[in-house]
Image 1 (cartoon, rainbow, N blue to C red):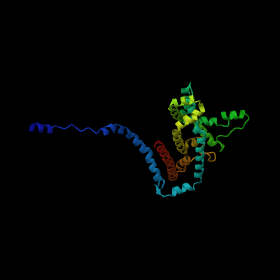
Image 2: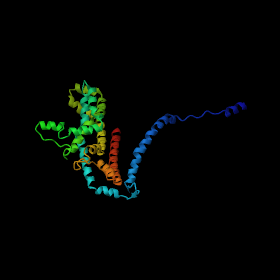
Image 3: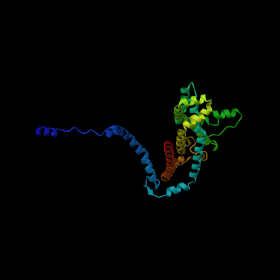
Image 4: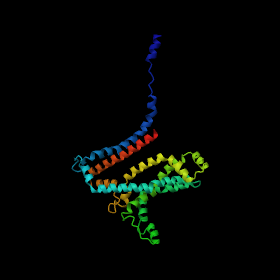
Length: 305
């Protein structure tokens, strides 16, 4: 009896397996590690360095010099910063009144189609796949004084519109081009939300005698209201960072009419080599956009509760 007990206790015990929760999430964590590495290396490390550089005069030859808040003072004393802020606000305003409602309208219109709905989706999304190099070249030709738009205007007896050189039309032209190219992606998101609305609601409204406009106003729009608010905040954040089209098409001109805040940061850093001042402008922008993100998150939480 004693022998059997000792033998039983001397036998090697099986290795304890990992706890179930650890084994359950181990492979998921391993697959996420590369994404975490890329996220931290290419997003948060530059953000932290931007905060640090905003307090330094950056010189890659002689070395960096701590200057405190001098970079922020330079930002507030820069006359071009005020111009860039005004242009950015004007750009955001134009994007809202010219482009924000377009994907909503197209999504609702396509959802009402009984035939060729798939073809309409493809046609609306096609501009989104045009490479930006081709896009800018195409629209510079369209906006040219002898381009197709001015050709129609001249045939009707009007004078050519200087889209690229007239300060009244330059920003409008850029927003119109971006609306044409980008509305397709947002339209698909809105279309998915519209198609998820229960069809019974529409059938009940039709039985009660509601027309198309009343169904849209009382059923469709209230059902996608949360998505509209979310897309609105995301568009505000995206347009406040806009600079690519302004730089590629007009380089901030004519007469700084398309010089946005982000484009001014790029010019300060890479044209004027004022990396510290550019970092300070980036920090101020980060604070403002972070506030918008917190506002969006708070509104979303309130709606969920």
